[in-house]
Length: 160
Length: 118
Image (tube, rainbow over all chains, first blue to last red; front, side, top):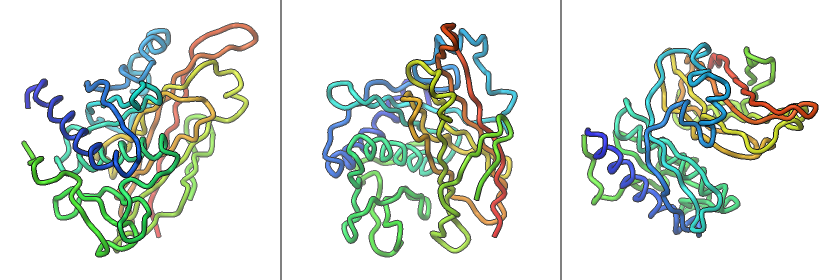
């Protein structure tokens, strides 16, 4: 996938997830930036890493080759509470969507002081993101048969 | 379940034992706090790269990065994992410090291995 198309795809995916979570989280979240991400792109740390003279300071403790990621910078409407979510590359699309959805859910949970999003309709606790049979879904964490819904609705078809 | 951080001796604590969701699968929630003595010399916010992890040697998606106060409870979840998995992890933090009036930039790495066994 060409770079610009990839970033657009990631933004569209994040917006689709936010559309679903925003209503339950009782908050409106904006996407400020979508860009490739690595250690050298750590939030606010560019200058700090330069001062350390070590753009890959973690390389020596790496347990192996790592994945590449796209970072989505999020904020509430007045640019307060900046947060980040990652879309991993090099994994299946469902796994990437699950990872991104989990990060966005975590961000919304923190800025909404624990509001369950998305709330399980049967129990009112937060659902968890998981790939089930190759489909990324929100599901009840206690009873897989209780409630399941696709993380991305039908209009958001997967693209390879 | 605890994992001794091999970089700096800090305890990196798994908040829960693996929670069975389906037979044989679970997640590993983790949490980490910068110890107060270090937090006291940090000026400004801490940049966290995001927890990287490997499952039986295979790279898995990172947890989310943060730019946040030093007293933040850094946390995340690794999963799904299976009984018998060998999990390697590392995270990387960068921040400004003031030590006795002298300022500078410092980094902190946490890393270790968890063997998921019944």
